[in-house]
Length: 108
Image (cartoon, rainbow, N blue to C red; front, side, top):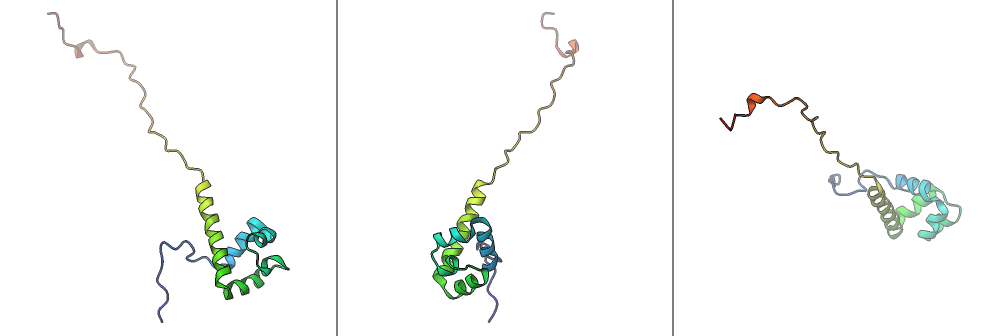
């Protein structure tokens, strides 16, 4: 069977479940993860290994973890400061005196 096609719109493409867990644990800790997603592997003696085993076997729990991670990514992008676009610099004003030859004599 051929390998799955590349999905350019899949934000989880190339991010492993282990990487997702490490990032969520680093940002929120096991305590908050266990409160947000009440599963035993987050609440009692949590480890990345036990969590990976459970999440790989339990699609609904894995989906909740992935959705939380995607939410965090969207919030991180939304909070990123937008660099304002600076207008191009204006040239310095011309300070040379006007040349009388440039102006035709109107009265003569």
